[in-house]
Length: 403
Image 1: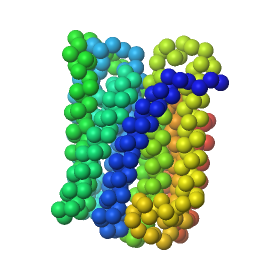
Image 2: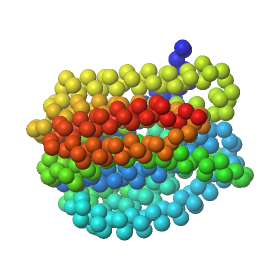
Image 3: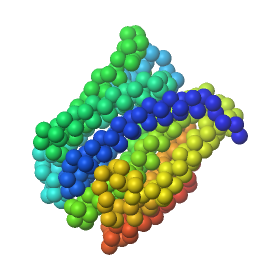
């Protein structure tokens, strides 16, 4: 089976730009881990995990918009953008109100101040806006513009976070910086859609979009909850110090998942186009084969590094020697590698309209939650529970979404 050169070209652009984006985010995490106390970093990691949970809306919307914008013209793209942003703003108001209510008991359970949790929830508004413009960019295969937009968001977040923590804002600093960075990225992303915005608007039929959005939302909801839940549960059952140690190991491992995202983002619009669906099966599978091969190579390299140099990686990341973090780093790293493979497989099937059995992914999330709560005598046992649940999730991604 031949390597898909079009996919590799798009992947290369996104791997470079996402690489810079992830490097800036790595520096952000590194600076926060060093500037904040272990306990405060544990709080920040928990809040960021909640943001990743709220990012379900963002990833779902971007995936749906990407699929439907990959094969329509500018006039309909303009209509798609306008309708989606207006509808997203209305929905975000309702969800933010619900979030504020849930945050009342959540503040007690997580031992985090309510104003800080409330501030964290403002990310909901950008989660419904920015994926619309980015989804159109991705669907139009403007990979350079998409990557640069992410870099700008990360750079604004980093600079503001360091400045705000330095002047004494503590955890409020990085949370405020994250929200402002997302707002800036949305307005800048619209500048890359000048041709779309200047075109004559034509009605985009959106009935099919909402039908397709449900399985996409559930699948991405399951993935996002899955990789966010370990830190949140750790915050509930472990002490602040132990949670901080585990959070550092977990956040390092998640770099594997985030760092390989460009592969699926480059693959999705290629396998989603109607033209691709009309080709022969071996051609249609070509892009997925190329993506899986590249993903596998990157995961193996990352896992080997975590295996050989765990303490060195943790010292580079946090600037501290942490007892226990190195022991679980390899386990959590393999877990995120398995989840990355599952994510690519799920997105490939969704891009081709395969949505049968999507509700079952929620059961795998429940398996993870039960395992993490039950096997929590120590961090090694806790990490092995995460690894087991990741393997179950990967198995589910293979057998589900077949029709």
